[in-house]
Image (cartoon, rainbow, N blue to C red):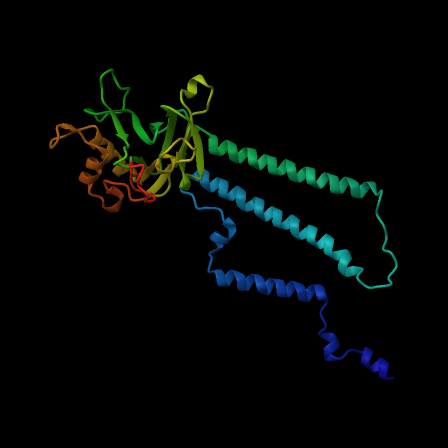
Length: 325
């Protein structure tokens, strides 16, 4: 009678939970606490450590990374469950050997076919993302010739000339709108937001690499790329105004680490104003406006700082011992 009355179920017995259910609740609680403690937004969490970009191409790569990690986590959870299930379900000592599934052709097809499907799907999204990042239009809004040299950069706006505001092929003897860096001045690559920009890369001496961290993209800069069958162009669109450091990402000599430049992304209206000034003569100097002079005259706050704000010139004194940022 005693045993029967206890079997009916007391409140304690009715409230029993399986170990798996309890473990799931604890895991969920820990996840919520960890998420709240970090103070991260949903976007930050879903980036899984991926840096924040400023171009559509960078965002496309971030989306690919996010869904790849999500898929990996789902596969991981399923794999962990399949590993832990026999450990939990057959943990009692003395239990007979569970049913064996070796030489089961159906299961062999499953665990061979699923990885193949995963690889094919991952390859498809990798290829489509890469094609999107490397896609180029025939008529970009702005084209910039990028010349790398030991140890600085030169930027030429294709089709813009000092002395005229129209965009047309430069004639012999014309002075191209050009910005050249030196050991005393960080070159400013002023670009518009919301427009398609094409970068034509080439080097004067050794191999360099054009890298803007916020683009989440870099490309090697070769000498005479057209003679060596190198892809020396790429295009993007900048969606955010601001100043962004650019670097050489290929070891190229003594001052490689200080071979920096700055991308200054401004609105299309400001960019048009900037290039119009660059194609005019500065009455104070009798020469064309430099990048610094044009930005100073525009007077548009931090975006028009005449000098770089993300990095500083390097010291050419080889006996100096101060590090350069």
